[in-house]
Amino acid sequence: MHKAGQIIRLAIYNIYMYRIDYIQVFALIRLFQFLLIVPVTTVVFKLMLRVTGYTHITEENIQSFLAHPFVIGMILIWVMVVLLFIYYEMGFLFLMAFNQQRGIRYRFLTIWQQLNRKVVYFYSVQVIYLIVYIALLLPLASFMLPLTLTQAIAIPHFMTDELMLSRSGKLLYAAIASVLGIIGVRSILTLPIFTIQPRISIRQSFVQSWRFSRRGLFELLVLLAMILTSHLLLLVGITVVSTLPLFILERVWPSTALLTAGMTLAFLEIAFVVLFSLLQAMFSQVMVAITYNTPLISKTKISPNLKKRYKRLSILVCIVFIVLSVININSLEKSVYAPDTKIIAHRGYTAEAVENTIGGLVRAAAAGADLVELDIQQTEDGEFVVFHDRTLRRLAGKNGVVTNMTLSELKTISVHSDGYSDKISSLDDFIEMAKALDVALLIELKVQGNESEDLLPSLVKKLKDHQVLDTYYVQSASSQLMTQLKKLAPNLRVGIVYALTVGSMSDATVDFIALEESWVSDNLIAELQQSNMDLFVWTLNKDRSLQEFIGKNVAGVITDHPDIALDIRTKQSEHQYFLQRVLHRLQFVF
Image 1 (tube, rainbow, N blue to C red):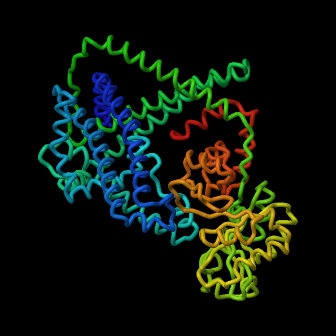
Image 2: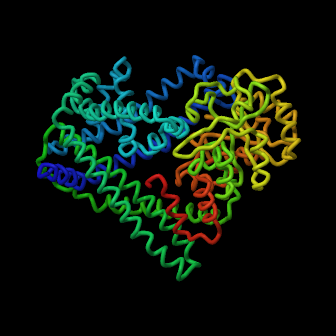
């Protein structure tokens, strides 16, 4: 612990002594990131769409899109640009820390030239090591690397959620995560070793990091955990202290609440950017100190021009603060409304019943869901059964393909999940119960490839017979089938389910799309609103995600927790305090 304390003191000392250098470096990094990397990414994608002739990308056409030679070339170039950006950003921080810890005077130009000499490795097969290294360290990289480049990178929730539905899936996920985690952690020092040592390759850096981890990995991880914990506690403390005036004023002097909220949010946004930058600097200092064993504090004189530099910096910070305050006041003022986002219970209320069962439907209605989503398939005898999986294995523990069985056979089978049990239901029984509960349904049609030719006419007839054709919703991942269904029943609300979609959706011929949350953008929301097309976002099980999309007033959110979603929608009204809105805007931290 004594050595750990020395290293942390060394890091704090160097960051303070060289604070002007760090301010300049981080200012340039953020400027380059937001003014070049993000816009270039958008331009490159639009260029790929134009050259290939696609209007938008979905899971139906992504394979042919990615196989296009121009797309392959542009993706490779984009990956290379991102890797170089990460290399130069972290390389600067590592080399600065290395020189500072040894008391070596340096210039930014010298560091730039040193990094340039090793760029040749990015044009060789060895770049694969760096790609693997970055991919394995994404959880840690989300704190260390540019926020917009790593914070949003994650495995889509629908994939992990489906894995977690079965015991074998949970074991598989845990095994893969453990193996990748071990490899990633043991290679954590690859980049600092590569950037600091002038004559070492990426592969050799990878090997050295792996060897070092045999003796010094635990110490390094403990130090990083201590720094991260302290950082999060500091964030919480700053948030509490900064929001206290808003908490008081909006109760005592409500007319000042909007102005105070905008200024408070602006201050916290600036504070968080500064703190995340400090965290990057601390991580780089600690990783270099551990790798090269340099716990001595160097003696460095403070530049005599600091007062002049601080004056310029203060003016810049004030300008940024004013601009952010104005933007936030305008945004917060617009957020004072009662959203009409529909709360859609995913496969019923699965927290208290088996998915896609009458029990789940009853509990979803009791929880206040506006719609209940269910999955249907056509049985061997042409009827419709409410069931999601292709086989009975996961829920019934039996071998059997659903579409190869009759409805009467399926209705005798019991299904089990998380201590609950129920019977498989027909679509007719589901509709009758939904009508009795006065709750509408969102029916997802699953197609396995052996359906009858009258699949769509049979479904339309059934909805007509139950007199719900004008009030229910039907969706499917098959865009072709849904286009046909809309022509067959113009009054029915028809939609397409997408696991991913990028690009314009204005040419869609349906009433709504259901899209996985990772691919929903503000531009898409605005485009669909202008086209009078609804957007259902799936599957939102985190409070943060629910708050975000209900706050954006999308047409519907599909969730396993309709009760929580309803509570969030209720709170998002004109009577809600601005403090809650401010805290919701800080989701990227919490």
